[in-house]
Image (tube, rainbow, N blue to C red):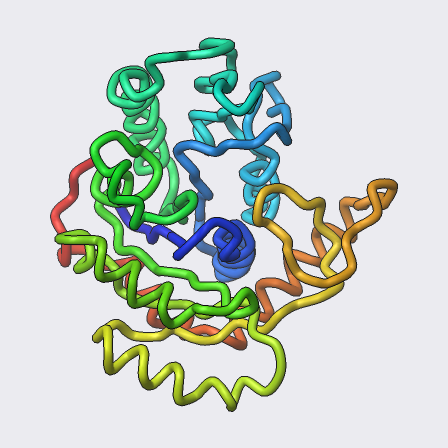
Length: 289
């Protein structure tokens, strides 16, 4: 299927932010684009028009793409109940309040729901932007995960790797992540450095080093953006030292303006033509769906 997957070197790298911005950017270009995250872990959820429950991040990404949020955009939602258990929402409905055999679930009902959702998107949309979770380099989870490289293979899409400059160690995070991906390393077609503060020109040598060391193209350096008016959920917005007031009201107009601003920043910061070529790559990779 046509599309890309956004993965991160860690949680909080800004994957959700990048996906939302690209959804608005490509929607503005007339592309019928769909956001997707196979599995999200969050107690922040939203109801679809037909009463189904998905992560609020995917609901916001749908709005960014100018779509009505639907359950197929986030077929698995894990709502933590304690340090050791989570409620499982499958296709928008409660599947289990606690599942001690979660790994078995991922390889049966879970992956089946993901495949059905991807097939629906492939049939009804021009392209997909898939969001991963955490890091794809957690090698201890490779045999059971259904949210990172397993999904990139299922959808047969190239991957863009996002690293958070603001928290430090982004070069090591990129190099280390790529070193641990095994055969999946070849699927990574671009690197995005996110949340950079200050003079981006000072990061030029870091970009050159990264490309020379990894052999992977750096698509750009996204600056640290303040002032966007979007409710916080997972890593959607970690944009400034000031934290949003719990009483802050996020109006539809303010949220929509924020999506426009994020899209503008990504358009100015990234090689969008290259991203579009990755998305529309007919004949370059065999279809699996």
